Image (cartoon, rainbow, N blue to C red; front, side, top):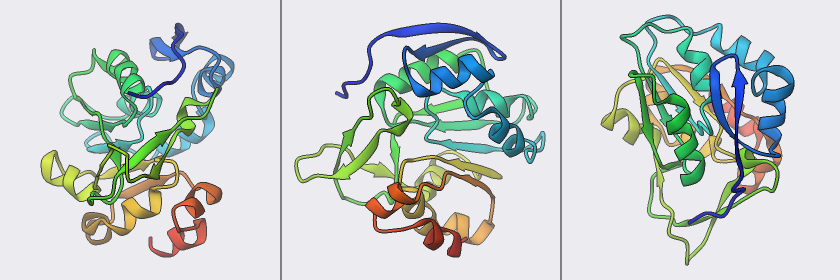
Length: 204
């Protein structure tokens, strides 16, 4: 369905064996530093308590989830949501030994009837994004739908390439229960979807 890099390599990492895309930005960071955005993940996961339930929205190949798993106990759980099917398959392989990880192959947004198509970035599989398209076949799922279908999270990581504002603004759960949020802020990506970093920060 989505055409992205075909070559897959296996790396020895701090998490053990990890399946990654060859010649990819995120893979290069893992090779150089041991993890994707390692210092940032170290700070973000320092806020996680052992009994936390977590949403990883835009989970990619699972590097944040694997970091978070080191902080939680066996009774806690992580829901990983990744829209790109090939990346989702790698996510499943990389987390298949963890019984408390749930996986869902969906894109996160407002959950309405708008349809989208997926645009990829060469050499950066984490940078693919959705654009509105009358001929598109992709629909998004909302944060509140995930809460209703799975569980109420204490912590939500959101890295969904410009849809962060849409996801937050359309979530009654986030506004009412104020879970810890770890959100990517890319002003250019947000502006493509009618928002901005400042606007997103104002609604938190």
